[in-house]
Amino acid sequence: MHSIGAIAERLNVSITPVREALHDLAKEGLIEIKRNRGFVVRKPSNKELDDIVQIRAMLEVSSVREITERSLISDFSALRKLSRKTEAFAAAGEWEEFVATDREFHLSILSALGNEKLLDIIGTLRDQSRLLGLDKFAGTDLLERSTKEHALLLDAMEGGESERAADIMTSHLGHVRGIWAGRDETDSKDSPYTPAG
Image (cartoon, rainbow, N blue to C red; front, side, top):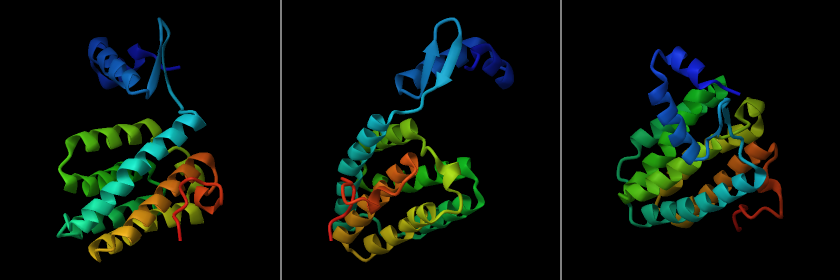
């Protein structure tokens, strides 16, 4: 349980802006406010995490396919730099930096469609999940494969291989769900996120 007053004191601000910010976070499902006691950071249920990945797959896979088919990204250098940074942060176990850079990477790709609503939705879904469980997977094959998929995705997109890019994104989201669950979802024959072929 966290105290609103303690947070305000740490930030050296009054309680009012902290309370307003916390109400915004509560609306997004990130925290739960306990009346007269403070707040707790919510941990999404397995069903919520499954729902988040399902929605992300519906939106991000088709978006990546369209961006690739229409060649909407002409210069991949900035995305490749972000891809390398996510790998470096993951290898160093710098999770706050990793999450921020990973978020920027995904949203930067999607921004090629020029759809602000899409970016808002995906950004909110990512914030609600916060890539749980990363610290447990430091140095593991699963996390390494997941981060290296960024470069593979960019290779496919730059090469105009829209179906391959869509398959890589599908696999990538399966890895994300596997990290949350403590297992590799794409290794399961029953996983709804396993790419065909």
